[in-house]
Amino acid sequence: MERRRHRRVHAQLKSWLCANSHEIEGETIDLSIGGAKFESSLTVEPGKEVTVKLVIPGTDAPIFIEHAQVQWIHDQTFGVRFLEVRQQELDELEQLIDEYIALDEGGHA
Image (tube, rainbow, N blue to C red; front, side):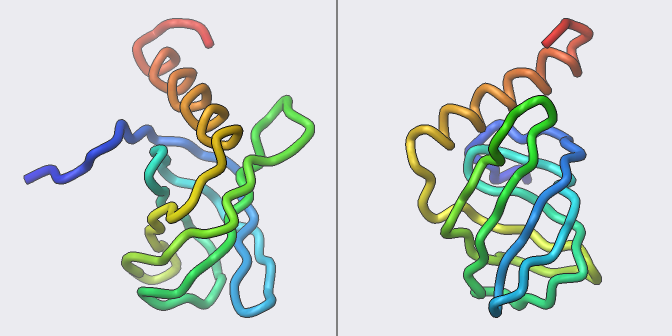
């Protein structure tokens, strides 16, 4: 049974993940305003807090989420829940998700 509270979209975005004083490049696999799934070689474990930077093509600055918590891990893929998102980043996430939904429905972003 699906338990998601937020719209989730398949998104392949370059990302930077920081934990244990290491910042490592990764790829965002899917995204919602409540969390994301990443593929990365960053060593994490459930409960670990990480910082997330989502690199959005065509923008000057990444979406920066300082507080996210690892929920699960499978090989080099893991899911995080965003614990705290500033309003500006929340607005940018919602706009990005809307663009992905429009593209998925055959529209134009």
